[in-house]
Length: 172
Image (cartoon, rainbow, N blue to C red; front, side):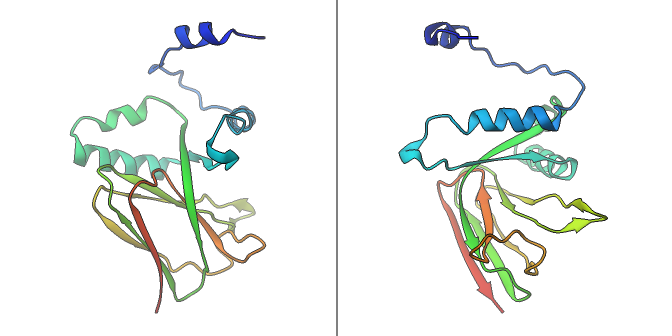
């Protein structure tokens, strides 16, 4: 199916009413693969897509309510929440390393730490922490076997915004 660019732009709409069923994982994977091909700065592919779980939804609803009472209900509209994050950092996981994040922006951000641990043979969810505007958080420590490590041995961290985020790894 080929759609002319002009028609696609002129007929685009934002939908705020969703069906009650969650999006199937296979469909999400296909959509993420398509999104990966979107144009980007210097072909860096800076984004990551995360399907948010119920615990993260509750944390986001709490933050939304604190910032603007009555706004948290918006997060209940869709049965599946996906966060597109950009940028990121890496740090050396360990029993004595803590990841510090200072959110200097004017809006809340989510910080996501990749997790490799399994629980009863099932993959554990990534760790996602919501940090309000102007706030800071100490995350960890995370033992080396519980957070994702690539060939470098470093743990990957991504942010929902990268405008004014200060990070550091503290060793105690």
